[in-house]
Length: 213
Image (cartoon, rainbow, N blue to C red; front, side, top):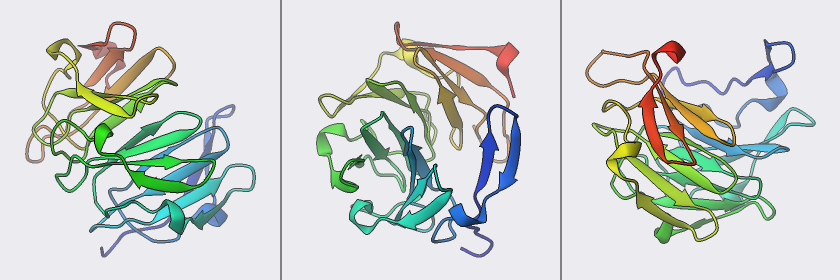
């Protein structure tokens, strides 16, 4: 829509510095897109109003190109994405439960119904490790879905994995043992700084006030 941008900024972890990288700009300006990737490439897809385009950024060259064979099977806004070193999952968006799976080695995407979210949702947070991905929150939601990469299946986790409050428009990050769901919008114009931590080994989630934004 009007005001959407294609800008890509690159953060160098060793120096905690960020710079514009025009060569890596998206091939289409858009908002509310989702992203995942592995150690060598990143994949950006979806966006407003209902985009399916997949852009692939090559980390070694800081360049981005469209990958039509990897386009989402249904364009949508506000999806979330997660994955491991070989595959990624783009789920939800536009009040869908739909999950598309991208295989990095072939840059191809396929609809994967067995991995669909357990409810229609959008603007979810997603994080995971090498074996599982976790989709938390979303529109008026605090629940958490878990996708198992080896079986391409998704299930609703018990309430002990719920976020501490309903909220959408949140972000998530993590490492091999824990994930953090941060910020979000629990109601009209009421953004929060809340951080919830999910421990993968126990699949339990708890507020971590010391980590608030």
